[in-house]
Length: 74
Image 1 (cartoon, rainbow, N blue to C red):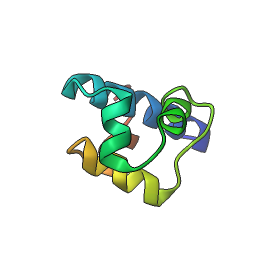
Image 2 (spheres, one colour):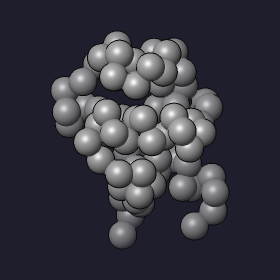
Image 3 (cartoon, rainbow, N blue to C red):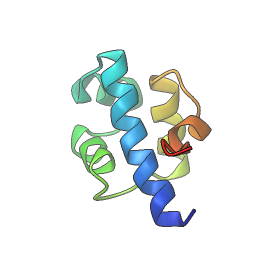
């Protein structure tokens, strides 16, 4: 898969994991220290988190970075 496809999968997985946990963007902001607007950009594929931010997001969502990059099209 290309870099673009991995990032699209990651943005979808962040959104899915957050919704599954019932966590608002505001709560994810509180848990990660990443602004709500940045998180919104990440979920919508406008921007992409760096590795440090991705680690904090994964930890807040009780998942792993590899799960966030897993393709839904297996």
